[in-house]
Image 1 (spheres, rainbow, N blue to C red):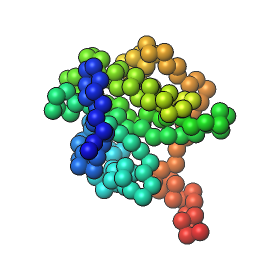
Image 2: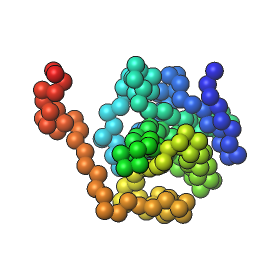
Image 3: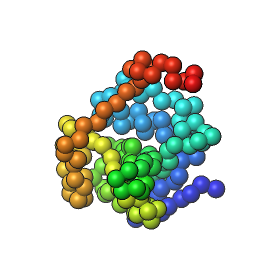
Image 4: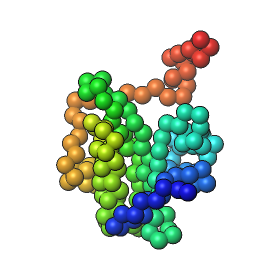
Length: 170
């Protein structure tokens, strides 16, 4: 039986394997919104491994209004060496455009932050694209602060393989 959380505005259902095509649909929706659809290489199979494989690395929920899926959130745990404690990282939160402005995203964010508190997380973090002013202003209105002075670096795909080509064999 799936975990169901009834909030005031939306019902959250923990992602199950049967939900993975819907999760992928939401991922593609956020990629479209962020003008990055060309970066989506996720498949139902890669999501299955990430959510339900031998070593699951993410968790997620779908937000419903009645029977209608209207939102999603995906998160994972990280660790702060400075604090010596775990944190929670919100990878994606996405509310369908026609359902924005109703408090659904805020309610989901408050719920997840509460879960982070209950689980002893010392940090609750996420990233937002610099051009996404509506999201930045929304997050600031919640009391979140941007991390000035930090730049995210990333190695992906071919760059990662070129950087450490023989590491897999060891």
